Length: 322
Image (cartoon, rainbow, N blue to C red; front, side):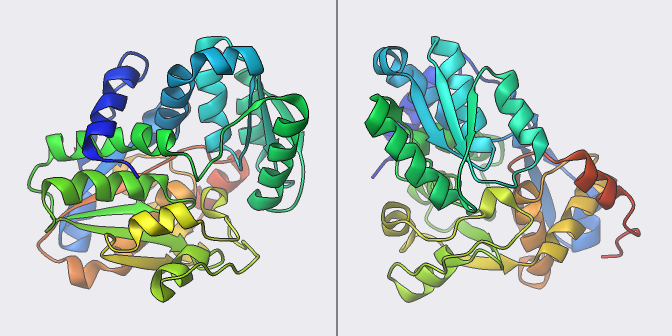
């Protein structure tokens, strides 16, 4: 478990290495949807994704071990980049295990940061099991992408910025893959004002957390069929579920077509490039528009690592009429 104090401690550390990202008001999207839309632009981080906050905090906090043993993690892209970025800051060797089929843009980004990349399995969980095996065999320090409280604290700093920039926010919408971003949202928002609603978002093709949250127990579908690699987890995890179970106000499912639509809206109406998982909160905001009328809503744009092919497909889509 983490608290607000842990997130403030994390900010004191990572503020030396990472920029504060802007929270911008989108007048165009607000007019189209009928409520005030504020976009938190984590796609402007050095790795173009929010997770770098957690990776930097982990690497700095455990610097001695990281340098001595090296770091290993499993990732579909953004967690791996965060660990690689943090590892490079402290001078640690980094190995990232990725499932087959991740976009080449994310593989190249890892290599550009100096990480070694190993491919294993079809989904994140299979890659994660192999990364843990490597850690045991080689004595490396394993950075779990989900069950790691230091990551929660680091990632939660983006929500400190949200409340500072928009203290009268009504709703925060945050995607859920493993759950670190949503944990940061509920820890900050619900501690400061329990009336702030926090909405989680999952892909329809990877809804293990959604099912688990609804049932109050761990349910794993064993599959992750979605274009949103950052949300492509095939099972739910006990620690995030235990934290989020009583604090999230709702979890919304969005389809791949709704995600692409949201990517198009962000690009055309706000000039922001978002990867599929980075546009999931926007997809949920559009889907929930009737219940959000007149409210101040923070929509998390959590990443911008989109492949050129996917970006081209979105650009060539017909204009979206909301």
